[in-house]
Length: 422
Ligand SMILES: *Cc1c(COP(=O)(O)O)cnc(C)c1O
Image (cartoon, rainbow, N blue to C red; front, side, top):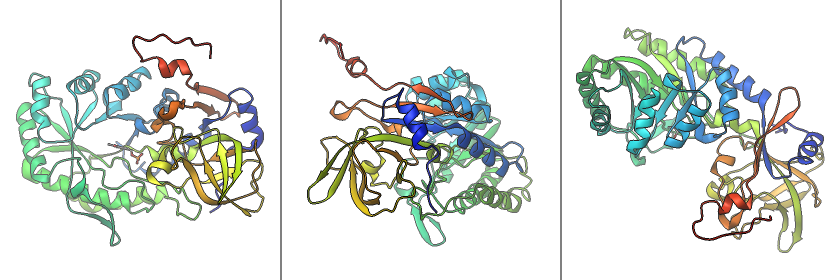
């Protein structure tokens, strides 16, 4: 399907006249509509809750907007917990899904009253020590089924190679011990495949987890209050890719719920999700201006953005669609490598991409940068992270994070004075 940007050249220019490119821009209307569609898809489950994976887009304005749509926060670190708390999100509105967890982080999550999702059975002792034996009333456990995880005979991922979660036997042991210590309710969690574009991922994962909780309930007598399907629903980065249909996904999970949990007398289990990419990726663009063109063995277009604004192409070879704003309907009769200015040859947003003829000064929209975009930014080569802008439902825009300055870059240095007339 043709990918069209959510803003026009005119809007991009209006923003750029106040906030110089490059910047990430987010589409409030799209974010809200998508969050509502997710909620609707799971409305058959009264306890349903999305805990937005804040690592995807750790901006309090975005988190607040999603909170208004009923979403909580999924945090993995001390700083992410502070971010949730800063927006006023605490208690069971927070899921703490960490691994290799420092004491300080766990203590903060406990202080906030977050749901604790334990990555390993050894964390029961850790929790017991940190709480003086007063473990939380509800605890979630992260499952690793081992082996390979397949959908329609295609291997999606290898849980046996993943560092996360624990075995079923370890879960049963952890549950028994936690019950002795006073835990009354349990949740289970698993994240078995990332960026899936099939409607079958969540239903298959749900079936696996539903059967697991039935077995664990039979083995331990524990009460399970939720199943956390975590993240993993993907987006159509490429125009020819299928798009996940959240209504179909919700119905697929519903069917497995009725087949597996309801007959087991476990029809009170809530479904939780921790989506990041699905919630935000399509509703962000990286807006960047063409600084230079060069012609050697290939044609190059050099942007004012670089991999420090969007790392996925350099890191994973990921495809991000590009639209030259104002040239949406021109024929794609030129082939360019679209690059940033890092001293790294993998700093390319696109390789041999068919695009319309591009001129210096053109403004490009790089699609699907709303999740794992700005968040993965870094400062290599002294590149400064870009601004973030919210395009509001009424058409106005708001700066929600300013661009970094050299002063920010030097702020953590000790014992050396710099003069910042820059
Ligand atoms: C990264 C992550 C998510 C979100 O994943 P997406 O692919 O962005 O949906 C959810 N839960 C945990 C524990 C994660 O690490």
